Length: 249
Image (cartoon, rainbow, N blue to C red; front, top):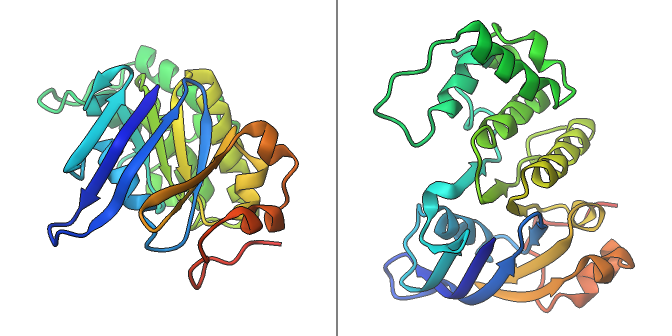
């Protein structure tokens, strides 16, 4: 579970980028985060991941304050979460070593490859047959799916997804979002997924969190958003969307 209380982050100029955010995301909850450019979405994820220091408030991850090693992240660019010159298996081995950086990469034994193949097969994208291929030759959707598998290879309490479909075509986007939702259910982690697509916010997840002006504007439950259209969602927001963040049809 993720709990934030009165969270505030600034970049040293004395002006809060996010201010007084209080929210909770339950175990197994897939929460979609939307808002305008510059509204504080990425800063919020950075604070939860521990890469940005909050100057006020509390972050509890799995019931423990500042338990950042229990947070996993997948980024917008599929090339960021994987090493292009490493094979698929080698990337999985790198993820297996997460938070054990002083240890060498684990040997790719037949047993470990079987574990990796089973995890990759669950993605239904053919990656289990491409274990010896370098990640750079995968499609964008396959590489992002690999990033998801790597991020959740070890248990985590919180999964952060930062616009993970922004660089993908519509078909790959839908497949990756389906995978993300399935992985959250299987791993029983709390998930915050930032997106610029209001259609994704309507179609996926258990709740929608609207961030604007560095504050949480609203949170809509699964029941509330089940009857909403993109236009309804826009009408509920108390802030304008920035240029380039138009709602999909």
